[in-house]
Length: 461
Ligand SMILES: Nc1nc2c(ncn2[C@@H]2O[C@H](COP(=O)(O)OP(=O)(O)OP(=O)(O)O)[C@@H](O)[C@H]2O)c(=O)[nH]1
Ligand SMILES: [Mg+2]
Image (tube, rainbow, N blue to C red; front, top):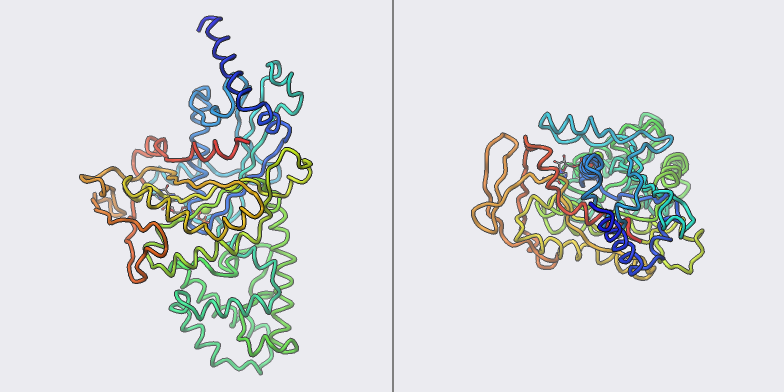
């Protein structure tokens, strides 16, 4: 490129930035660290999203960021470097391990601990913008991956044991949970609560409840608390200090030994586990990605999607939202989420022709949360993504081809995906494709859908 051309392209970018308002860049670089909280229930696709996002970034950084999505918001000429870095004190997301696992034909395991990484963008020191802005030359976006089960428990911070137990109990009496709670309810019905809550009895009671949680989870139920009971937990001993719901005839007596025992353990759980978890990973967030796997719900029933919607609304109360306004003192931004991306994952599992319907269904699923966000003036947008494209178009617009878990090729014809919960017949369900990890892994990850737009939306101010 000759000198004149370089100048033209830089000044062109300069102009377009000015047109978009220097405010936006000023805002960007006046803050050093953004915390992006990924809110995704178990199996919603968090780890696959991380794997694709990080490998796309790494590949592109080797190619000089020519097609890095954020360049739409920030021109390449202003960037000194884009790096992926560990977050001090946290384990870095095991990208190589994840890729190796995929390369061996296996999907990632469920995440058992917190991993994180920082996307650090540095500006060139001597460009006209840094002179103009005279603020920070580096901006970092922190992303965390963690077990989805932990997320479901956050709303428990706002309840005491009795309230939690009563609401858990009434949820289990409703469909779809009640279909999986029979044995557990039988056990409680026959239980003699006049026996004292000895360590052995408490352990037994908790084991019975855990068996229900495991069964319901395997059947696609997301409204399950405490989700963290299902994972090994080095910081909280579930068998010694755990709790489970009690029937309301017991919880209504605050002096009952079982109520006292579980109330005490619940408090311990809040103080020793939930509160520190909330503070370390969730309360600092200023941006949020909410990942939802709608295919799972569709494959079960409308009631499943309904309880997913309820889980989502409950979760909103665990985060603090606010407006992103230039006149707000910076300090106020720190603990408020000003921008939310609602994302339906695994979009490759349905044909292109149905994706608009899936997007509408996603919008219907978020209607409750959105009302809350609007009240707080927080910004939001909806996206469809696939971290990897495991399917190909079939013979008709409504069909797709894929390789199943037994390595056999299949082609499925899809019916219309409902655009709202109401439009879904309560007795109808939509089988979900189980595709195997493709052998041509990297090209298929490069065909990931929607990640660029999502990241661009998040980093833009
Ligand atoms: N076809 C397809 N499948 C996906 C995609 N992303 C995730 N999956 C599937 O969904 C499963 C769960 O994805 P993960 O990324 O492990 O989910 P997670 O949210 O990290 O789950 P936890 O670690 O249990 O909280 C994977 O094992 C894949 O089978 C995608 O983009 N396309
Ligand atoms: Mg995971």
